[in-house]
Image 1: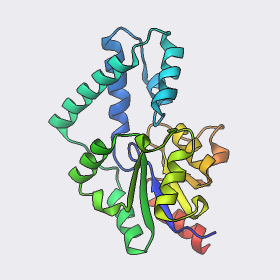
Image 2: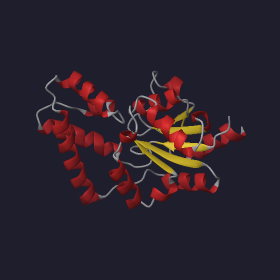
Image 3: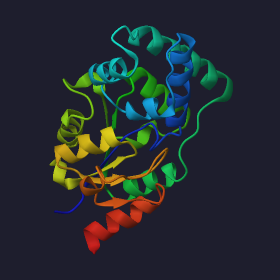
Image 4: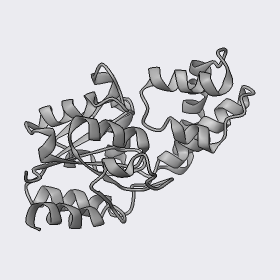
Amino acid sequence: MKIKGVISDMDGVILDTEKLYVRFWCEAANFFGYPMQKHHALSIRSMARTFAIERLKGYFGRDFDYFAVHDKRIELMDKYIEDNGIEAKPGAEKLLSYLKDNGYKIALATATAPERTQSYLKRLGLYNYFDEIVCASMVKRGKPEPDIYLFAAEKLGLAPQECIALEDSQNGIKSASKAGCKTVMVPDLDGPNDEIRPLIIDVADGLADVIRIIETVNFG
C-alpha cells in the first residue's frame, strides 16, 4: 500500500525539545527529593499521564507527587525556553517542504498540550505545514496505546497503513505500530533496541533521510 501521509511525533522528532523534558523532569523531581535520573525520564517519554504516574510511582513509591513535580517541570522548562528559545531538529523544514510539495498529507501526534504545541510550532514557522494536529488530550488513551495515531489517520482521511509514522521514543513507536502505521524511528536520545526493532520498518539518519525511506516504500 502506497504512502499518502506522514504522522509525526513532535518533541524529539520535529523539535529538539526532548532533551529539555528529560533535563527538567529530573531537576523538578530532585527539587522535591526524588532521585530521578535520565533513564527514569526517558522511560516516560511520550507516555500518557495515567501510565506515567504509575511508572513513576513504581520507581519512587506510592507517595510520589506527580502533579507537584509536573508543575515544577513546566515552570523550569518554560523559564528556560523564555530565556533561550527552542530549536527545530535538523532537516525538519526540508522534510516538511518535501511532503507539501509532493502532495503528502501531514499530521502531528503529540503528548504536548494543544496551546503549547501551537506556540512552539508557530515560533519556528512550522505550524502551517501540518494539515492536522492531534494531541493526547483529544483521545481517550495516550501513547503507548494506538488511539492518537488512529485518530490522526482518520483526520487525514487515510488508513493507518497509508501513513508513515515518525517517532523517537519506545512509547511512541509502540503506539504507531499498534495503530498499523508503517513506523520509522528517528533516533534522538537513544536508538532502537531489541523490543522495538520488530515494530519499525527503518531507522532514519535524521529527518532528511525520511525522504529516502518514503521514496523506497512508494517507488522501490
